[in-house]
Length: 183
Image (cartoon, rainbow, N blue to C red; front, side, top):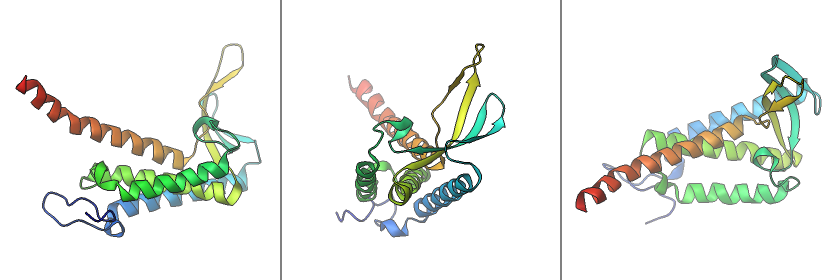
């Protein structure tokens, strides 16, 4: 089978990746929304500054993340950019393993590709990723506890991975039932 073609849906021929309109549209929406919001943050919020949206709960920040999720591997922007390229190639080449013949599979892959591209652009252009959404609470002693800042690309990646796990779990369920019936 040609690796650039998706596995045929139950009633059709294999589809070239560039004919996967739902995947491409989802990726484009995530990518454009990510880059527009990051440019808004760059223009309106100073470096390491913030704007309170909901006091004690949500603020927009302008944080430069040279690592991966939650600043893991800090200072590794270029190796992470290379890893992003490898991940994109693998997702496209092996997409037929992700139920891309289903609407949920197409959505998941589009979210992942758009998110990876959004953060890859930042890594190449700025040598860091711009994170700007920060949820937090104020403790009784006045200190702040919060979730690490993130961006729209990160949301796309997390939701896309979650959907793929859901598909894999759902896909595995009937097989498990078959195995139980046979025993």
